[in-house]
Every structure is written in structure tokens, then in C-alpha cells.
Amino acid sequence: MSLLFDILECPEFGPQMASLKDHEQELIIEAIQSRLNKNPMSRRSPVRSEMLSDNLECLRRIHADDDLLIFYVVCQECRDSPFCQSKIGCFECHKIGPYTVILVACGYWIELYEHILSDEFFRWLRNVKFTYEFQV
Image 1 (cartoon, rainbow, N blue to C red):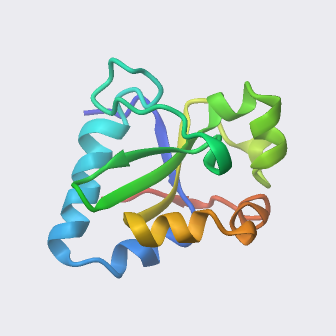
Image 2 (tube, one colour):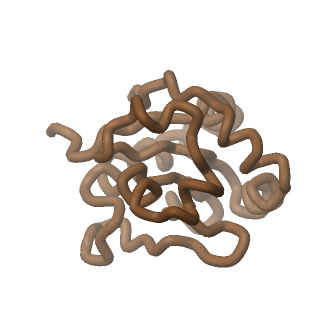
């Protein structure tokens, strides 16, 4: 099965995955393989994701189960929005193809929201290099 979207991950995504239990890691991987790579922007896709609002604009999320979330950015969508470009503005945006999903964070929802809502998060995201390709 070939991916419709390339999937990259932030440097902290791997350590977040490693901190989860084995069965939780499997849920995250399954969610990425079976849902996220199909069409991460369509309401008709298995993801059924909408862009988040308020302080989380430009990010999307999917549930791996009731407590586990994956936050991600769709590069094409970000480039089409001047607001997202100024908020996220990935360091290597010009090197990343439009049909790319960047896995930003994964883990328990309450911890992720605390992390992502911090002011430092978006400042960090603007300076990170996405050199890690998601590996199963």
C-alpha cells in the first residue's frame, strides 16, 4: 500500500512514541497507517478531521483511542493560509512537498493540550527541521 501523503515527524514525536506502552504505540501506528495517510483533509476520509480552532488553529488531530491523540499539520493546507504560514512557518517549508503531513505530537490528550497550548510550542515549531521520516 503506497501512501498518498508523505509523512514526516517532528524530532520530539519519536521520544513521545517511545514513552508510550507497546499497545499504545500500536494504536498510534495503526491510526497513522490506516487513517491519516489516506486523505488527511477530507471530511469523507476515515480521519474525519477538521482544523482545530482558537489557539490551536492550523493544527489537526485524530484520536488513536479515547485517550490518545495525534496532532499534525497538512503542509498544503498551511501554505494556502497566510495566517498559518505566519503562525507555524516551518523552518524548511520550501523543501517540503505540498502532499506532506507533519506529525507534531502524540500522547495522552490532557498532556498534549497543556504542551501545545504553551507559548513556546509554536516558537519551537517555527525553528525545527523535519528530517525524520515516519518509520513503522
